[in-house]
Image (cartoon, rainbow, N blue to C red; front, side):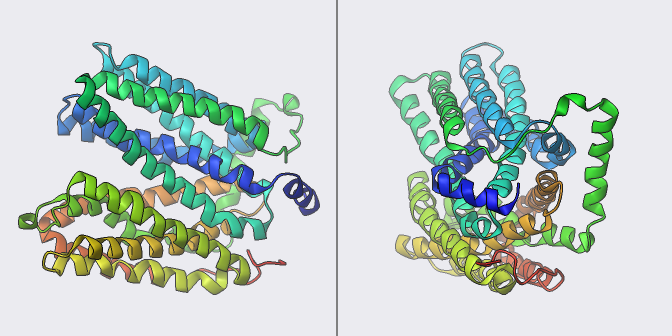
Length: 431
């Protein structure tokens, strides 16, 4: 689709009509699989060993999704894929709700969580590809902060509001399986509503080609060509290094922030209650993240990604100092903790804008949907591997030295920005 057609589509329906709901819908299944499942299985009496082993493998669909992303690019339209996956996710969540009261709830729900994982990863591929097709380069820059913000809002809503609701039902009914069945019933209804809404809200920006004439050999040839074309891109090695290392500090921080807030002072933590952590991260943190993401998108749209790349990298890096301070401070007050979390989350939201824009920039070309998915696969790998080691590092050196270590890792975030090359006009208004 050419830029003129995109402009006509943009005038007919505002991106505000679908970007917030689309990326809220993208975030919820991920948090359900990766976070809500852990809490639910813990409340249902499973051992930590089983929980860590089985739910850890559920991350795999997001790491390997590039291997089927070419088929999303080749077969049908991104709009159709997106809506179909939302219907399937809604039905899968209903399956979890119905399986919870059964004697075989663990094996049944785990199997459905796997289905949610692969379906959600496919939804990510299609939704991200649709975003790049439906918007001009300038609009992509302008709304990248909005999309990442609503994705994170979904994360907070999932691991905050839904978990609080489950706890309230547990307390009132005493029936733990019923409480979590209600939560997944709500998720199911929400996704069926998303599918209905997006059937109307998503503009038709693609013309489906005649797929019926394609042989299996032609599809396989194009599948191989998608990957070959990605790894033939100019400076692909440097780009992969950037994707793996830009978020190195945050990949480790995100695993230990909540334990740090919850652990008692005798263990080096801040000793907050669960409710206080919910307020700190679910309210103050999300405000900082939202403002950082929105402002990042606005400034990137005005001056372009190349101009803001290094300031955004410094923003992600310097704000990590707030946790170094909190780990050394003597009994910091709740307002001070809130301020520090606000600063760190604002810096993360602002700096993450550059990362998302670079993935879009590097994915440009004939197979942008599949190439963007490959990029997000490297992103997932860059978050998974450091995060897996973060707990061991913290237990070995303690919270203070761990946060100092994350500051040292910030050198990687800043350093990789000097390796990549970006067109000065990318994302800038009028480009």
